[in-house]
Each structure stands twice: as C-alpha cells, then as structure tokens.
Image 1 (cartoon, rainbow, N blue to C red):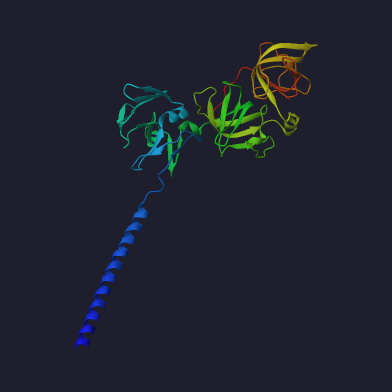
Image 2: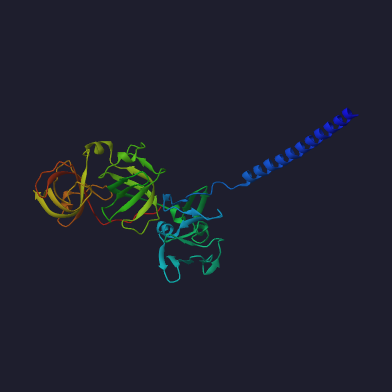
Length: 357
C-alpha cells in the first residue's frame, strides 16, 4: 500500500513538473517573440550626430530630438549655404529669412512657420542650443522648397538652383588640401575670384582627358570648372563644383616650375625695348607664404601671356596700372624688390558673365 502511494505521489509530482516546465517554455517563447518584434520594429540608427550637407558641401552638424523623431539642423549654416539672408531678432528670439520673393520667419520654441503668408506646423519647434538656432530638417523641404534626403544620420539638402550649372575658366591662385576641406580658387586672389569647393564626387581631368588628383594641380594652371549656380555671399564666394578640367597641355605643364610662386596686384612700372615689354614690376598680394608681395619679373619669349579665360594677349597690354597675376620660379635675386623671370602672366580684362547651362 505504501509503495503504491509513493508511485502515485511520484507520478503526480512528475506531471506537475512537466506541466510547469511547458508553461515556462511557452512563456519564454512569448517573451523571445516579443523581443524579436521589438527589435524588428525599431527604427534605423537615429542616434548621435546628424551630418548635414547642402548642395554637396558639408556644413555644421545637427542632432536628433529626444524622441528620435526629427533631425535638427543649424539654421544659419543652412541659409548661408543656400544664399538666403538671415536677420536675427533678439527681442523675440526669431530669425527672418529673405531671398528674392522668399520670406519667412522662424521663432524659437514655436512650431509655427510662414509659407506664402500662410502658417504651417512641422511637428517640431525650433530650438536654441549653445547659442545656435536649429530647425527640423523638413523645414528645408516644406518651407524653403529644397530637396531633402535623410539616410540614417546623413541629411542631404539640395536647392532647385543646384541642378543648374555654370562653366567658367580661370587660373588657379590658391589650393586648400585638408582632410575634410578641399578647394581651389580661380579668377583672382584674396577676396576676388571664386572658391570651388571639391567633394569626393568632383571630377578632376587633365587636358588629355585623364583623371588626376588634387595633388597634380598647382597655382598658375588654367582650368575650366563646371559648378553650381548657387554661391555663398562670402568674399570670395564659394560654390559646389562637379568637374575641373586642366586646360594647360602636358608640354605647358612640363614648362612650369616645379615650385611656383605667384603675386597678384597692379603693374607699378614697365620697361620696354623697341615696343616690346621686357620687364614689369608688380605690387600686391603674395599667393604663397614665402613669395614676395612686391616683385620685378622679366618677360621673355617663353613667358605665357594670357587673359582670365586663357586666351593669348600681347605684351602691349602689360601697361602701368593694369591688374595682373604673375607666376614665376622661387629663384629670385636678393634685391628689394626681388627680380625673377615670369613663367606666366595673367592680365585681367573686363569679365564676360558666364552662361548657365
């Protein structure tokens, strides 16, 4: 009898354990399934810094809102890149934006935006962080009518004008080759000319049609650039650039000094013999740190004399008071001003406005 009771107790205990284990397993399966559903429905990476680019050029970074629903981008950096004037009103913490027929006003902490004299809400109010006003990225699309693309933490904005391009020629006067910023300046030095911002998508082509690197370029080279119609209001203006083609042939490039100095300025004095200019004195701005800002350059039959478009000019156009850019070897005399031999002289003639494609 006792043995039978023990068998019954053992069977009951085993049955309870099995049923309890089955319930636990079912509960575990439900938990795992729930976790899988949560992971599957989680949004793609919306944490960390928001990287903002406008017309292919990186600008100041932004951030995600606390609920990860909206990417916030710096308003002033956006408007400067799009060529929109921004006026800050400290008294009511608002920014007034104008460009041509475009007008809108943005208020900090107010989800209220003006479009064609109508109020619009975007679901997120502008915020001020560390003295910078940020707006939701959709502001660029809904209010400024730009093209917006958000991929993870990458926010890309392109204006309607960005699809239009301009092609113009000019001699390189400055090259910036930093890790995150690459550009060349053409058409003038200092505040003159234009800065061509380069990206990983910018094509650099030699006169023979071969792909080259930024390191293959140097000041003094004549190039043709295809760039955006949009420019910043800075001096010199900056613009995204899609293609740069070197116009100097391989022979012309080979004749260029390995290290090239340049001085941009005004001709102070001219020496001519039998009507042919043999020497000019330039005073102005140095194009290299160790180059002089006041130099005398000998002109010989091998000196290339061109205008801003790369067209040949005569030595008679090297007149006192003319604006020029002289390029030469660093082999100079120790006199003051130093004397050298010009490799190329660019004469500034009245500029013809480039045509939009």
